[in-house]
Image (cartoon, rainbow, N blue to C red; front, side):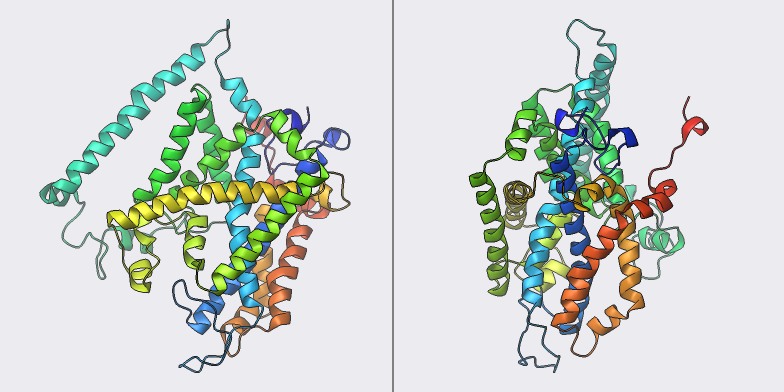
Length: 448
């Protein structure tokens, strides 16, 4: 069965040899390839822009300094930096969301297989419903009540705090989160493979959501996606691999499971006029990002934090450096603004992301389409390969000192190098070398 028919094939997995050729959907592979390239370019620009911001001292939501007006005598940024910052903002806003949507699309058969069968044996479905009703719902209800009591009663909060007076994680403490983080193996902070954990969790949750009606699924997904920002869930683990990131992107996956075959074919088989409209929307989105960032109408840092979804809403105040970076703002106005901003980005990512996918070729493209069948390798291998390339060539040192990178350096290391490295990681030779790491076959060692 082809991907267009809703077969539940992992988004990042290359099919067996017998499925290549006529059974593959070239358009879907082109989409996967393009999104993987955007992710590779986004990572390189993320690292280089962070280095550039440290060099120039750019403030929260500030524009890039392109002249010599700096009071500290810091060399201005290259003229190409605002354009690349706009490219990063745009790609960061749509790449992972669209990856999630495609993942959901490819999980439709899993969802369908878990739905109650009319006239069949529904014992598994009934047990899943009972688990949700008797365990999940009571857990959420009583956890919310406990949190309310916890906030109302400082005495109870102190009584429930583990350890003694030095357990709060303050400097010099011998116990608590800070001491534990320093003394234990940090498993969660490296973020190379967070999406695989998220996709595995989403597919497990789909077994339960398949028992629900469509309205309940949508209400639940949006409640989780937006509601997680009001909690400290996003700050509970490492900076990147956070539950806030996983649950904040969950609505995109749910959207993908609702993409019917007719909807997908309508986009894949779009007319020339629709393709032109999609290309126009993509171009307009890039221009708006450039103009907004250059004139400080859009906040680059706020868009970046929201794209990661790794921080609670209390950090979303965009008006001062202190409140956004060093402190928090839990005022109702700030939290309401943050929640509305997330809801807006959901709509923006879908509209602009679908427009980008709609502008891609529908036919087999040499190198591109075949590479789109190996995005697992591009996803897992590109980051260490790209970091090694940048480090060995002294790019980070050049970007962080003196005048920083020039136009040629930015284009080479911020765009061309990540495109080349990410593409190389999706080739057949790399797949042959790293299959045992990226797609291990456990066989009889694990399975019955």
